[in-house]
Length: 122
Image 1 (cartoon, rainbow, N blue to C red):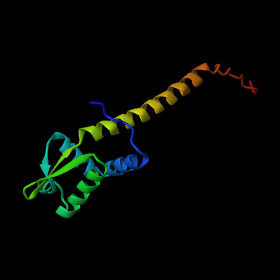
Image 2: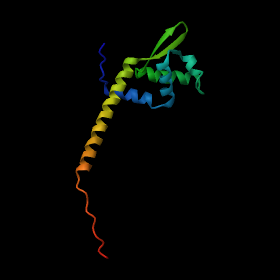
Image 3: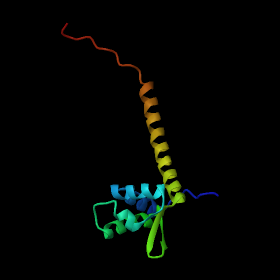
Image 4: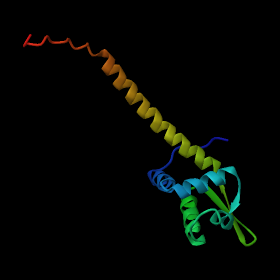
């Protein structure tokens, strides 16, 4: 299975927005570990059920989690394909910055050492 790793600017904005809040990052971490009901997740946080639902909705809009109905419950789990796409995006950013740092290191190592100037007052 080939995963399209290109994200649109809108998708990138949604992913970074979703990951900007510690609660959403924690919900995503839990959803990566397994499938949980929204009510079970809500019990883990010192906030209302509605607030947790909103966090879940932001993660779902970003495509990082998938929500499904099972009876009266709504179960959430991570979407591995979207997480792979987000990871690929971050890897490209890391590669970009590493290459910039490597170029900077090369420029700095090519500079001739400065000669020490004797003190004029001696």
